[in-house]
Image (tube, rainbow, N blue to C red):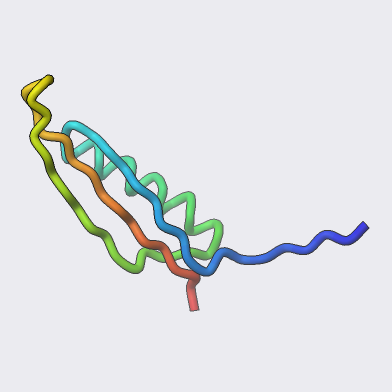
Length: 69
């Protein structure tokens, strides 16, 4: 039986929350998890949109992770 392990070179993850503190905690937790996979943050993109049904802002982020070099 052969087992082959490949490293992720790129990974993009998306996060959503109704407040920035929660969004930042989600991102920080995932950064810690991805460090075990030898991934560093390459870029972060934030967006915000108003949700009229709830009367709140919905914040989202796309985080691009790249292999540590």
